[in-house]
Image 1 (cartoon, rainbow, N blue to C red):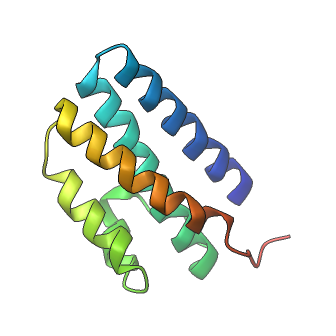
Image 2: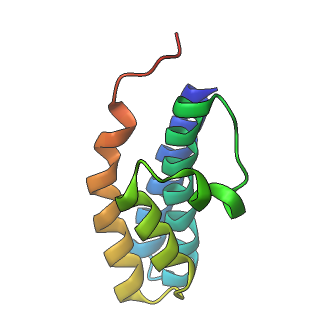
Length: 105
């Protein structure tokens, strides 16, 4: 399951980058927000073995304040070029968290 989530993350990130290049910032922002939610889902899955709906993720991310804060922040914003660019930069930082050792496997 974890591999599938990481694959989804990469797909959302790639799609978001492509949409930004096309100037479709609202759609890019939505895709990048899905990528951020997927980072949270992976971390929660690693910790608990549960898949949690994105609407409840924040409550499970106490060990990951940077992800929790980003989810709270970006969930309240809209998809301008500036917001999409900022989210994309944060995702590049969080990408490393996806490669942390897993208990799965």
